[in-house]
Length: 115
Image (cartoon, rainbow, N blue to C red; front, side):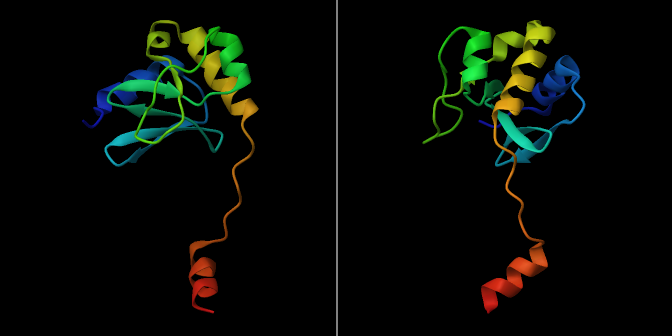
């Protein structure tokens, strides 16, 4: 079942973080903060990538699987009622994740594949 755009709007309105964007992927949404994937909205539920910082803030282990074959993620739907904790979790998760890999421009990748 695909997530509704209203779920994404609610998250963005609640978090109010500069740099937080969503991208639609296969009927669901990926959450990016400062270019890093910090979580997903799947079946209208918020899943945040597991990190030690996130576990320290939530006080529990990851509890849900956003999509088949995924590692367990923090199920953080309840934080939509607690904007400060939601922001803290998203910021701590982004801080704990490595920087995104730099990918060559699309045209350069095509040339490299044909050589």
